[in-house]
Image (cartoon, rainbow, N blue to C red; front, side):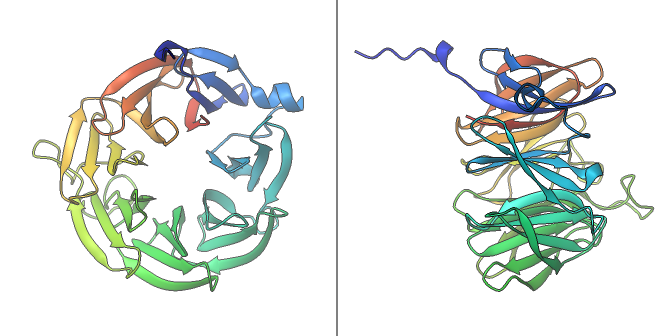
Length: 328
């Protein structure tokens, strides 16, 4: 009879490490607290990551490493971490901020400090078209043939139809939409807005808000303040967003860790007093990964339940980590 040994379970992840000494891709098994390679890019490709890493996104057989200062995305083979090519935005001087995948051959990339989204042909990783959206698009997601961008500079969400490659709608949301995601069944888009007057602009404060948008109709279904009875939405500054396949959205603040029930669209609750700077969803394992600690001194990856948000285990990861991407 087969014996299941949870201690032999693996939880592999790729970490973006940015320190004064340089940038690297650390490869770890979080469950075993084991560093598999301090810099898997250097080991595999015999060269250093050319500049600081913004984020890491995995899609199908490829890994997309964002190099915002170089105006490029580096593409690696997922199986062996070998460098394949760059998606190059240098001629336009466009900084990549996020990416989504409409299908196996089309990717859409947002560019901060602009009003542009690039359509990328994944068969040759070339930019084939640029689409004008709202100001400073910082996040992008897709559901079916609908592409949604969070435009932080003007408090809107732009909607692109992947069948027409055109901007089809603009939706007004709360000021400074900074994170965006899709619920488990793909029916609703979830937008996190920071609100105004929180160090980004001189206006009077407005609350951090969650906006629920129907993907099919593009109508706003609900707007919910991101706060609780003891945490003011006026003062809340969302730092990251992870949506689990159990329809819970997890949002770290400076001193608190909030979760939002995407099914009821109303319940915002505080998991507890945790100082997480970043969260990511691991659909492979049904877990949430949170980043805790001081990047200059030492950090931990805190692995949490994807319904309750409570810690399952944690592991030290060194220093300098700014992004964690689950691989298995």
